[in-house]
Amino acid sequence: MRDVVSSALLALEERDWISEDEQYFAHLCLEEAVVNAMKHGNKGDKNLRVDLEILDEAENCRIIVRDQGDGFCPNSVKPPPTEELGGRGVFLIKSFMKQVTFNRATRGLEMVLPKRKTTNDTKHMSEEAMVQFDYDEPITVATVKTATVLDAVNVTQFGQEVQEYLKEHNGIHLLLDFRNVEYLSSAVLTELLRIKKTVSEHQGTLRLCALTANIRKIFEITNLDKVFPIEPNRETAIPRFMRAVQVAQQEATWDGSTSSAS
Image (tube, rainbow, N blue to C red; front, side, top):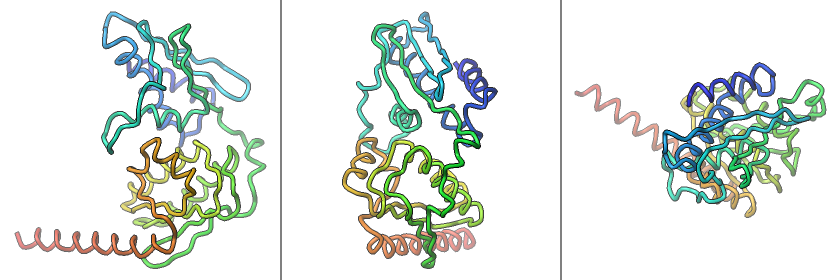
């Protein structure tokens, strides 16, 4: 199974259809789709095969995963009720991929992946900063300020601006303020997962605030509200975040004192 996924990932990389930052999530999606086909489509029958095919389209590539059983339909999977390790892969697939469908005729799970944006594609990104960073010790507030719609173009700009800031600030306690955002595409969920991964790797913490009711519902449907702490607004978020940071620092001090004493 891993050889098939690795070969498919290598094909995407060689054709420059995914960027280096996208490799992790592309690998996750491919592996999750193949595992689900084996587990749910073929019902774990090792005598049945799973095929993976990549088709070249104009602006996208279509990835098809077929099993020899009853087929794996992602619409039949419900979001996991808690923040468990398993059960959320299909929702991450839907977040990363442009489109996910199940072809009953071929028993194939079809995933449409937008090809990597070239320099010409990204030149339309705004020259004005999309995210404003303010420091309210010990919290850094990042406010999305220039767009009410996060589409395919400015999602990339949003991710780049935040990631660049994170590279220069280790141990950051970041509050992402979406007060100006009225619509949020599924691609933003992928960017947020990347941001969370970077923050965690640099011993920081992340919270979100000021999501509209419709955007909040997206997080609830995918159960990502269990992954991202979400506050109703900036005014309540900052003092709560500060208190959480202080408590964590105190606990770290206590643990250090205990270790030294022992």
